[in-house]
Length: 309
Image 1 (spheres, rainbow, N blue to C red):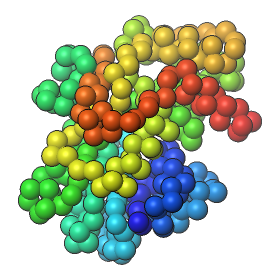
Image 2: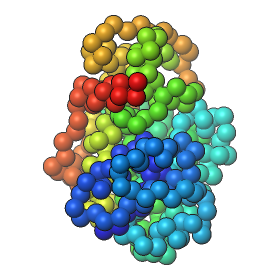
Image 3: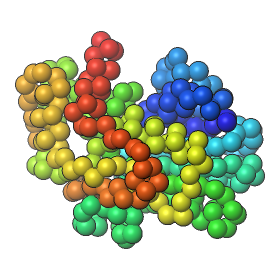
Image 4: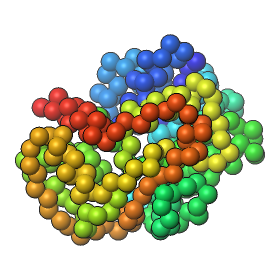
């Protein structure tokens, strides 16, 4: 089985390429990435072929997808703050880019697994979030990811395209970059702590998230590819944990074995207050799945960051 991973040189994509190529049923893996946020170095030692280019290039997409049995579509312009700074760019990559990928898959008859985001739930306060809830995005990024999943799910009944959409919840782990304005909370915290700097918490720190280790996500995605899993509705990819940002900081202090300092700043526009997944649909599709506990995932993440020194 040959697989294309869009965004394959990114944080989740490179971890997925490594997981796919560890499985005997997988042949060639092609990582298609424009390297705007990913890095060729992330693929070192994986055995994946890197094709540098954009999902907005239809000719390139058609050429890359033509020989594939499955496509995992992870390419996106991430970050809520980045989408607030440039809504059009988020729309072009996340919405229009997805349609380009879908068209290539439709012509090739290729199974598609695509990434959406828990941010689509937005202002809906119900917890845990189940897939039957309404969607009320609070940012252009969230709106563009809602467009992503809507397009993918529409191509099933419209064109008979076999597809599966996952809603990711705060994925973290090795290869996730830090040190830039749009970095996610876990790498930002780890990077600051290892440099002996205060951890910046936006707001009061009592906002909660469902943190999901990237190794678990990669295993689910690889299983979905190998078993050609489809679903007519989006599926949460998280496990119902609910951890505040302050709790995360204290867990990180344990993983580091040292004290940390916390500095509070203003809450950020577009951020949801609480996020927690209902994993019923996920467990039905992947009944033997084991989630990596936060403590274990943070230890692996800290180990990776320390290996960079």
